[in-house]
Length: 271
Image (cartoon, rainbow, N blue to C red):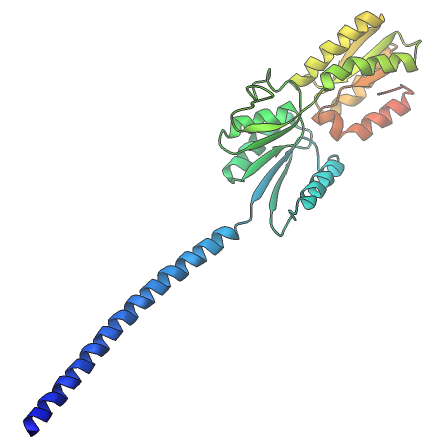
């Protein structure tokens, strides 16, 4: 009788021990499962918290492009993107030096930014295109993007480049017409341009065509750096030019204040 009770008691203890072992096993599996779930949740949270980075490539200096940069930031804010909160921006300013475009674009590509905004014409867009064929690129103020090889067509760009085109080349001739209307006695007009910017050569052809129709003699003045401005204006004055038409580029935009000063000092009407 006692033995039966003893056996039953032992059996009960044995079952309890097995139950505890089983519970510990399930507890261990539960901990592992919980850890997997938590790890996945943390990884997902970290992925969700990843702040997108925009590469902002500008041909001008920071001060020269401050108005456009602020407009860009304002546009982002209106869409709910706040710099330093839910987006980060990698700024690269070429300071009007065309030869810096490729290095700055390559630097942004190495940083693996999520998108590159080529903020200012064919030169920076070309540099960005050569730096990456995977990172999306937004071009701005580009002349003839199809002819330049940036996109397949306006309707279907293809590749990794999209954005805005410019009609500056078409308007270049119109600007010359306005100069002639304002200063009808000006028979000789100088054109200030950076020959290193291929898009300006396209504009120059439009100006030359308009000049032929208007009976104006053009004098092209080339500037590649700010050190060329003084000699360029002296050359223009020697040609007795009645007005000056400036074709916008990285170097002329960055130093437009200096150009305005020289135009004022030489009493030369300038557009």
